[in-house]
Image (tube, rainbow, N blue to C red):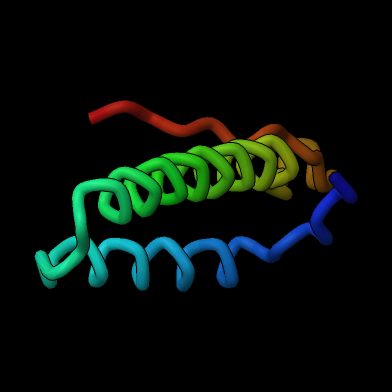
Length: 79
């Protein structure tokens, strides 16, 4: 099978929202619902991975006491 072209985060999220809407309607057969669920899980994983990648790429520029601008990694604080 040929590799799919990479979707953007927004494209994957939109597709995931459509899958959720299809499942919420409740008019799918069991087999269709299972297929949609599997598709949704795959899309959810893709979105999560893309968010993690983006988080790793984010840096914060801060001004040190010396007046120089330093680049620091972005740290997510757990609440």
